[in-house]
Length: 69
Image (cartoon, helix red, strand yellow):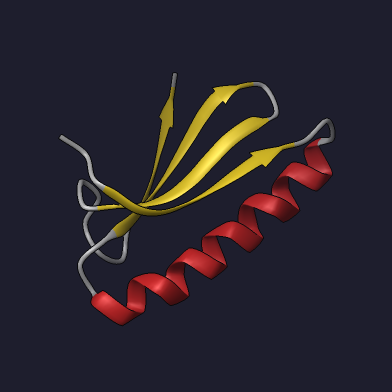
């Protein structure tokens, strides 16, 4: 079972805005991950323009993985 401790919802209509928001979310989560050193970042694409960026214990610390639903 995947445990998440912090997540950020991202919903956009523009690819340029999506890239900016994903980058901002990953940078913020990287800072949080550094405090514990136990979680990586999981990016989940739910549908076009709708993503979740979250810390996850199923992703090794220092890694970012993408999941497409």
